[in-house]
Image 1 (cartoon, rainbow, N blue to C red):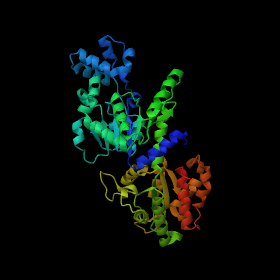
Image 2: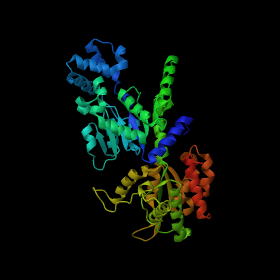
Image 3: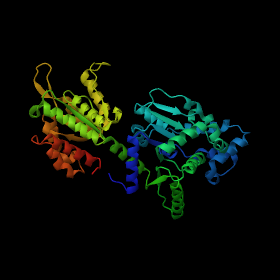
Image 4: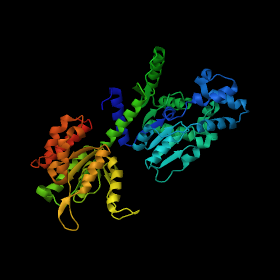
Length: 476
């Protein structure tokens, strides 16, 4: 999918940040409104009513409205807290598709001003462990084996008395929550932020970002936020002035006409990120006309070249295939002088013993469904095994299962038919129904046909595979 140049530039920059583990998302109230939550104007309407004020007249300074209410009650927040809890309890909030995409991406740091727990729920749904920081004391300890940190800079609905809401609480933020301020400034200076559902009217965040700009001057990196285009002329002018002001802080607008476009953009980011991880599926007790030496060289050189082209390899350690694939990646790591294997390789060797009342075939199928979606492209090679009872060579049904699961999971499929066996059958299947597998990629058909020619040399196979994968990743 192609987007306008500003969105394309953002996607490429954010993908780079994801790969380098420097991507951060900042979630504002707008992310929750679509899930049944109400904006602060509606939340504080009962407070305005009790004070005898018009919420429409007070909506531009809601923190002062909350402060008026507390002051009117002798400086005690109890009734304000009760109203907030009751208003939250009136709606059932569910995790959105945007939350789920953000939870699936390898984002390690989330910031939010929201009191709700939607991003936490989304991470838990993905089997991840979030380390939630809702009070200063939380910043002094780290949750073991955490997958992500969630900084709730204004608190959490479960500890409503400690939330930040009134004008005085905002004014005292850097004294009472100084550790949050420091953590935010550290992340903001060094990482790439994407703001979603945030209007930049929060006085505390405005202060922190302005302090950073004052310190760094023009040496600020680009960060991004979604903004829906206004349709009324007067509002358009105000929006234009606000955007120009935010640019001075390194904040770049991502213009959208409808909020549903955010989901499309996030899906594209996820899809492109996954396509930088390549599953190599296959098994071989026999290498056919290739012979063992040439087959091992092909697998080694293919994975080495993919790794050298900045693709991460995912392998289930298939019999007769996995070792050569891993060695190819390790060879490239040695060449590049990088020993951080997590940046190059994902290994998922299959369980060898029955557990939980399931036989190995059932276990392996469930296992495949979990690890195959970690990639965005799947390569298939060889695909045979010897029957344990008869010793007769037969097709590897596991490779067929991986092909079907990969297709169902949305992976792009690249069978190397030249290697024969199951991979040849899968290659024929793709070629005969090419538009079903690649509806918008007719230009790749000739390259795919090349992969079915058993007479071509290893170097041609490798060049063709990389050419196809580069094109699928929009690389020229």
